[in-house]
Length: 573
Image 1 (cartoon, rainbow, N blue to C red):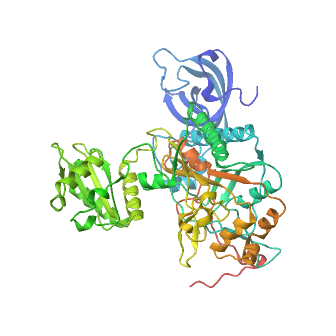
Image 2: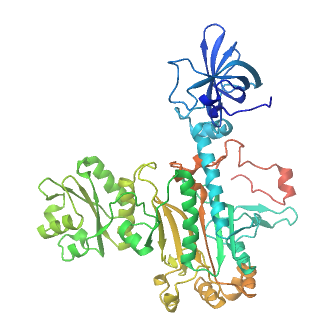
Image 3: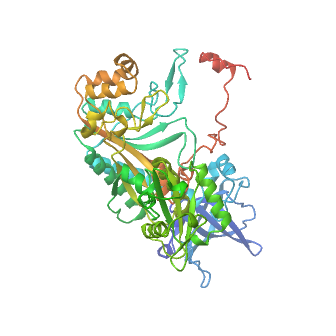
């Protein structure tokens, strides 16, 4: 008989009477008399009960091979909560394949262990149903993405991991060269330049599930290294890119949920900022920002004599305690506001607020009407510069309204028409909102030098439930437009050639119009798995501090290795 003939979780009543060989880990053991025990054997498919003689030497997480006969459980002992609860394996012979130390935490989803302990013993943590479920979901998502891209005519191409350093908005991880002491490779923040070179090379449609590395601060949706679906296509426009990637995420969503992904909504960057105060809004709840500037145009209340006044309605928020309202006020100040005005809508339809006596009846009525206030609601108002008002209320909206990750379904959103530049740096130069190869909107090209902050780009983002999944754009393929953008950034032709020469040289040999997009697979899978952090869908993640408790990385190199690489560390300060 082979080592294994069946998986534990696959046994059903139809298998009754058949002899099977199972392999797995001891999930639990229950004594039944002096010589008999029930052993729950677990593999990645599930658990089955095995009736074993002389099981005293079997402990949790021992690895066993069990042979026996499948039979119905005795009447009254069935377990309807277990997929295999109608059967058990009897007449068992047990072979211990591997003994095990007591695990550092129970291998069950019913108890949550400290994350540091879980990551230190990740090989044990991966046995839990939650991790098995998440990683197998991730594999199905990857397969669905590949099928979708290939069905749309994309060619999978692997790009280098050791490259030259290129500015992409975050710090590079660098690797010293042993053959050229004092010189370094960079690990790719993305395959951006290489995929554009693929377009110059005539590959037409490229994709890759690419590993990218960025030395930036970690958080729930960010790790040093991450995986993204990366794509580029020639002779396409932004609508084509949105179509390609919409089909890909729809395929991934459908394999994860078993349902059909609804058509993805679309909004411009300006509208997203105006309505939600963020370019990655969560559409699972309302609480939109409402402009009240005109309602207070002639106000005598000094705090509302500002360029912009907006408010949000918090349904049922009138029950908030004064202490909580004070904390919200402090939060608003931490976010950059000068203050926060709150109003409670009472049963009579009027607004109760510490500042009500400074406002006219018309101003209060206009506020209640604009925000559609109902009895029991809380209204939060901020007055300041437009950007500050949007940011503060956008953060408060998310803080107060965002539902749990497993509620509200999946609300994808395309955000389009981003500004080409996000602001002016300390050097007086505009800062690219995406990267310097993003094509300006042709309608705005005549304002590029005179009013760069008003120029829109042919860039778009994909958002899911308030998380930015990824970004893309139509690329600049015309040398004249590219040099205009470089000049705005302070790069003359000589410096641009020094930094991006290989790409610019390639464009000189005939670059097709092209566009591309990339989105984070870790983030997509985390949301599809209803997880709050991507660490739960990554097999071997780092901690919040960037450490790897499993391998001890990062760790120092000894003097011999440093010398071999031509490196010398400064003395401890």
